[in-house]
Amino acid sequence: MKITEHLGSAKETLFSFEILPPLKGQSLKELLEGISPLMDFKPPFVDVTYHREEYIYKKHPNGLLEKISTKKRPGTVGICAAIMNRFHIDAVPHLLCGGFTREETENALIDLNFIGVENVLALRGDAPKSEGKFIAEAEGHGYASELVEQILRMNEGRYLHEETEIGFQTDFCVGVAGYPEKHFEAPSLKFDLKYLKEKVEKGAEYIVTQMFFDNQKYFEFVDQVRAAGISVPIIPGIKPITTLGQITMLPRTFFLDLPDPLMDELYKCKTNAEVKEVGIEWSIQQCKELVKQNVPSLHFYTMSKADTTYKIAKEIF
Ligand code: FAD
Image 1 (cartoon, rainbow, N blue to C red):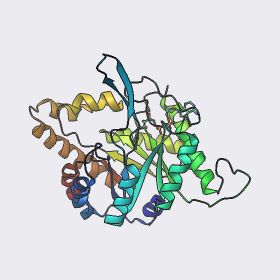
Image 2 (spheres, rainbow, N blue to C red; image 1 turned 120 degrees about the vertical axis):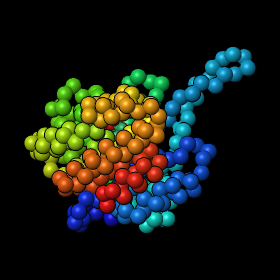
Image 3 (tube, protein in one colour; image 1 turned 60 degrees about the vertical axis):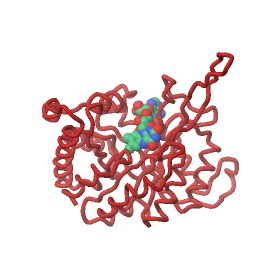
Image 4 (tube, protein in one colour; image 1 turned 90 degrees about the vertical axis):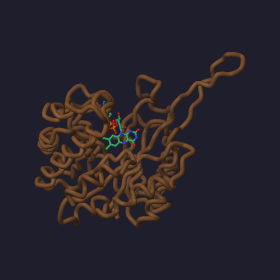
């Protein structure tokens, strides 16, 4: 079923979540068993992230370093198939511009269509960790809006090299990312919203937000998105803080602020266990307020660790 159908037929706020593929060499079994308790909250869909290549350096006996491209978390498509097969719910693979030519994107979409995936989250992706700046593949897309456009063309049966013929029409429902605290490269929120609107005009049917810790930022974002003329559902992304390290890592990595009342509590914590307790309680209060405002779904960034999300969801659903 399409995400828009799930959201459209829901009578109350839904529960959904995102997982990461395991590191290469690790098995899927543990991941699937780990998320299994979350099925108690009847998620209609689960997102599976995509991780582009990274560069590592291998030292040869002669001292020379070889730069090698490797994917540390492959398997997004396989995990989607496994989730649909095991839990009989929809899996939403994330699809990136980065690292893909248009041809590779087309082939990936054909694979996804053949395994029964009906939804994709279309993203630009970031530069590989060792590179400073996002650079599109020679035959790839520079922005998520272009990826949305390609998917929608396939939905019309228009493939890359057969533009004059109508081929098999896919029927993907496409979601895109939105940033309540602005995407880090955007010069202003106004310009970020201009490009968000472009993604929707190209055919995106829903938005999932970057994590935020201050609900006011989400509410203001929704107001501004609506004022910009965008009417699609906006699903809030929730991430409980669980470790001391995340207090500095999350703002640095995701370009967001931690509100002072949360920081006042975190500041008192000496251990990860104390941080986790504060983080869970903060997320519960966040979620309660969001549910009161009838948000379409609470979408949890689980980082594949389901226990924290379970504790929060148990208080909400
Ligand atoms: P875009 O929408 O293309 O925007 C990127 C930047 O370019 C923005 O600053 C925007 O304002 C600007 N822009 C857009 N169009 C134009 C234009 N035409 N001209 C000039 N500027 C423009 N990353 C992963 O690698 N894997 C994942 O699985 C993943 N999942 C994510 C899920 C969610 C819900 C979110 C919020 C993010 C996720 N990301 C993921 C991170 C994402 O890839 C990065 O944030 C990336 O930097 C931007 O992606 P985007 O799709 O928002 O890009």
